[in-house]
Length: 230
Image (cartoon, rainbow, N blue to C red; front, top):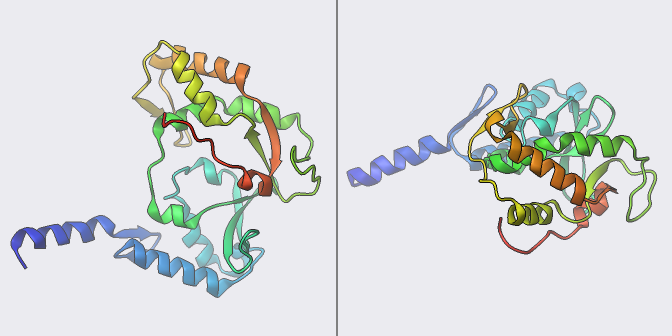
């Protein structure tokens, strides 16, 4: 093998290697196969923590690679495996939180480990208080199917978040921030230098967002907003 190709091959293997807890994987494909087999071996399970603590710890470490870590697993207390509601032959992982709520999490996104857009993270972080305030005023009823007994509910932007952001970027005269800081729980937020930008965004979102509560099923079926890339 030519020297340059050998060097490239070695670098490529090195870039793909990863440690998940005490387990080492040479490639993402190896990690994907291990995870899929682990899920199949455990099968439908209401509590992985009680059934297999080693598997529970593996998943917790895997979740650290999720693009929305750590907010995605805030207050996690257990993990369960259920049938996918769309494809009943497939199994999926759900996280169970301390308040009893349940949320799905994509283990494949954890494997890809794609870095989430820091700007969008900061935008969502800054409006979190608005989202939580809205949620606290809602009773559990889906705005679309009207179900009162869903496993979980999501606060949804009736006019898509992406649409609101697009209009905001069209209207603001301020420069888009490019530097962000970590919060105490490792989330991305705006720096003090961009406080005016953040305040303008929060005000715009508050005045333009039409929030509603959806059950998980209706939220997943909702079509994505398609206009332009912001």
